[in-house]
Image 1: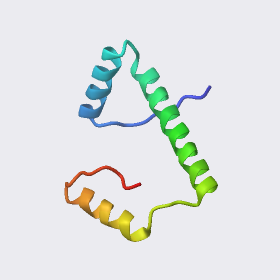
Image 2: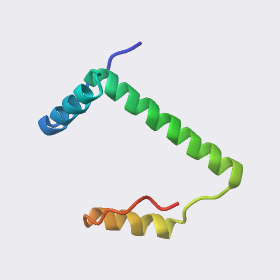
Image 3: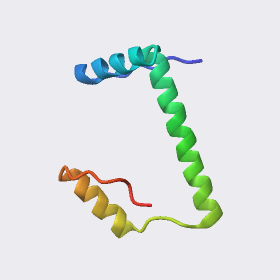
Image 4: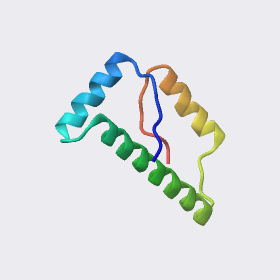
Length: 78
């Protein structure tokens, strides 16, 4: 196993500490779990796309990203 170093804003580190404590975990364990979950989800999405060919159009993706940039959150289009 290798170690990486990342710089985080103080607020983010405080939030990670809080979440880790709530889950009886360490920050390192929490980050490892989050990255594993992200990787698994990303791989599952790619496999689904390869299986079905279903994706999201550029126009829909851009509209969603532009809304996020304006502070208007809505779930990722499917």
